[in-house]
Image 1 (spheres, rainbow, N blue to C red):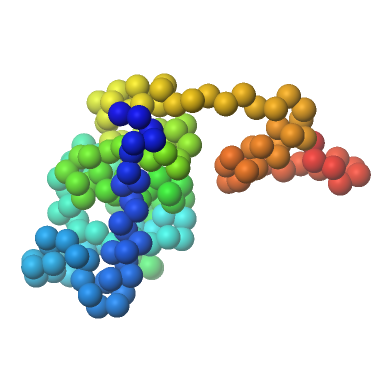
Image 2 (image 1 turned 90 degrees about the horizontal axis):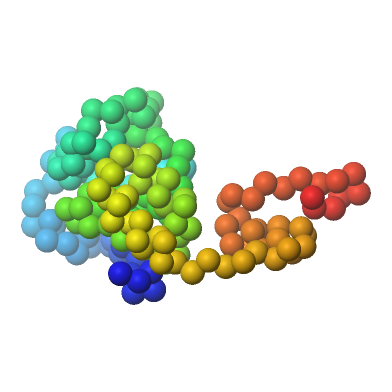
Length: 173
């Protein structure tokens, strides 16, 4: 599957959040179900909050979120699970649980970051193997040779990963 043919799996979550906020429901087949408050949990990923059902996560008991291992990330003060992780990757990882195991590498994400998140959430080696051909087929772009141009390129490519350091004159190193 080509990276360019992949629809971003988490793209519907923004619409779903707005519908739920406005009292319109999620628009899914689960709307007809009675929601058991005890089955809901909140996951905070670096300040961005997601709600899902424990039963949705429990379908994959060998993963971090589907097992009791998630409890070490529970904050009883806020009554939520907190992960200091990559937000954009998490939308797709949560969709993995909601879609019964469908996982695609979104074209908008850095493949290395996404694979690290898949490893962290322990989605499984078989998932990583399926992603490997997709990742290896992505076009590699040569970075500029000049250090300042290279740093500027990296800032625009992935602003969260770039560390900034300045010389004594205020220039970027």
